[in-house]
Length: 104
Image (cartoon, rainbow, N blue to C red; front, side, top):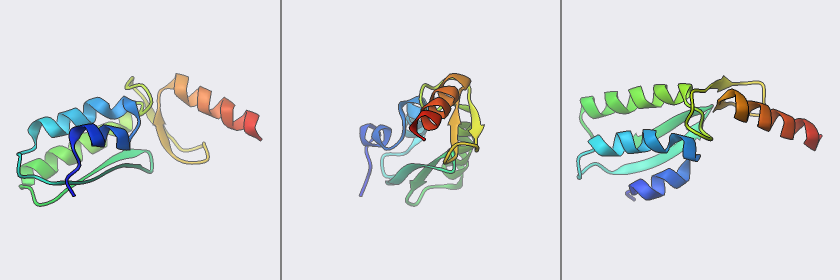
């Protein structure tokens, strides 16, 4: 299965849409995108066979995801004290933390 750019953006929160675009912009047409997800607060972007330069580029973008709020795209950081790990800006971190406290 090859995941399109539009489908890929639905696999993660909107804040990482520019990261998705960054990867799709350099992918050769023959490269199959197999999976996109958030795991442990970071972007995971799996492709079929691709050259080392493509894999290195994807790895760099995945690392960059740990500095970008997955909700809004502003600068963020990995937050591990919620019920799961997320990369969030201060505003979204406080919003989710408050929502979790209210739900208890």
